[in-house]
Length: 55
Image (cartoon, rainbow, N blue to C red; front, side):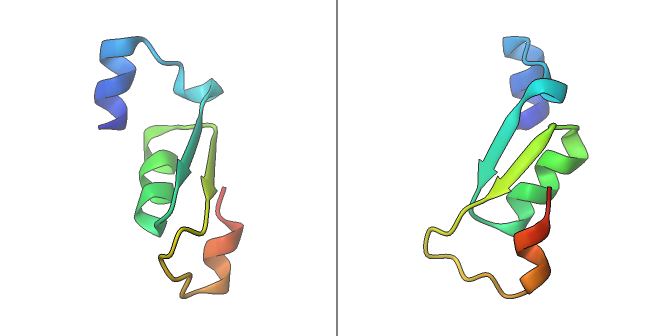
């Protein structure tokens, strides 16, 4: 979905921010080359303290 948005909308991922509420959101952002990925608390549990340090 991130890469599709990049292609269809001309988004520069190296200058973008992704905000997600699950570790998989953050990993997707990192894998797609998003400059910054931020994990927010929205009711999904943070099960690993390291999840709070992903960028």
